[in-house]
Image (cartoon, rainbow, N blue to C red; front, top):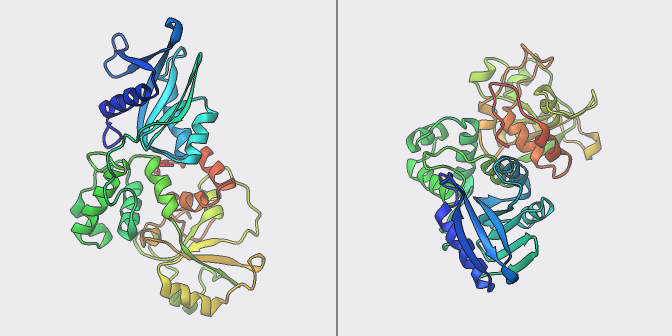
Length: 351
């Protein structure tokens, strides 16, 4: 189970929570299966409700859909499914409720529903005291989470990540420890998806400016000043087309007008300032010709994709990860698109 909530701790926590409400509970293993537990919660009159437990560290509204899909096939039809998690956000609780699942948030709340049984009550907090830092913390945490999601199948060590990010190994080691504490990487430092993606999405806040005009490929000296980077796209740093227009090229289920203003990542704030001076700023959002953004990590402009061979698009594209992070910032339309979008190979879906 990696860095997710330990199953033994989850078992003990659920038993303690149920008994704190005056109900009796017995644990039994399913015949022939040492990996699954059933709980018999005994009610008055000799009746019992059978509960099957799934464990994770975190449930949010965004992670719940994928988690429920993964768990669904292994749940027997005649049992009450229940999630035990270190933390379940308010909107994550709503998603579980809508799906008819019971849950235990180890911070101190149990919801348990079944034939003849309804519990929705505070229980003693059962989680261990959190570490001082956990989850995606600070700029190094954002950069490390991004690097891991760009390489979800690779086993990246501390020194390798530090060299890639240009950070001190000690800072990267602390960031790894915080991710492990939050249940967002496994013991071998692989990203836990989609949980890490959605944690990163909460921290993804690019600096953005709306432009009055947009540079053109092949524009000469002005393009050089703006560091557009049309040469050797996949091995150099430069502007990267992102968000809705890029999502269309990657095959995401989104429709867009032909004159939809493009959105770009630019390498750094100095490029953003030069572009603002040379191209002007839009007086109002409806008048923008394009937007430019500085990402929370330089990787957005260093891991670009040359799409000229398979898309009618001269601009380098941002990696699908960054496009997905931009779409995730829209709590309505964007997140619906992500739920239906799996990018083509060689890219992997991590959301």
